[in-house]
Length: 194
Image 1 (cartoon, rainbow, N blue to C red):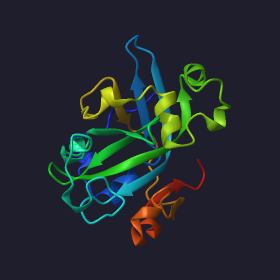
Image 2: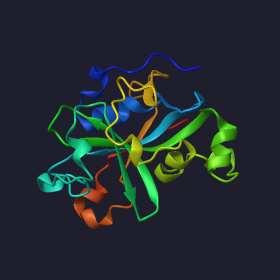
Image 3: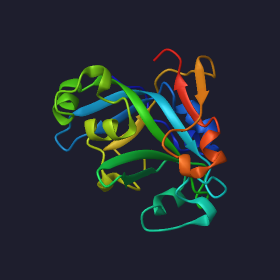
Image 4: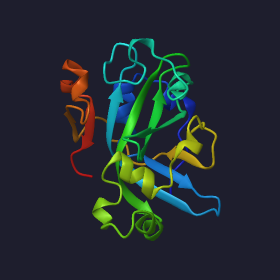
């Protein structure tokens, strides 16, 4: 089972600190029928908001699509990419500070058979090995955009194991080459031993 739900205080951090702190925690998606799909977070990516050319809020951009980024830390920011995939982010910091952490990969913990059905019988290792894959496996879509992870029963993060910086690898971000020097910044974090 999962540990206690993370509180608002946990999320009210800068996105780099939060991205590292989320590693090892448990993402919980509870379906309408009560079934829980869970996975341990093993890869994250920080988006630093207004100055960050790779961020959806770069330059202070505020649209219907990214409005959730402006909510208080601990809300979900779910968006559609490439016209076919959903991606799930955890909003960081405080209200009106549009920063977030993309959840890039999970190690499935609970509900693996359901995840396999959603991912069309993908091998367990590949079920949640990318942001679009994990969103599909856990039935995360736009209906969950803006949901409060600190109070929701449908989607939240529960305490897993703490990494305390040990075993975290920092690399450049993926798929944001348009962001010039921001694409090279080491803002993607992985657990060395997932």
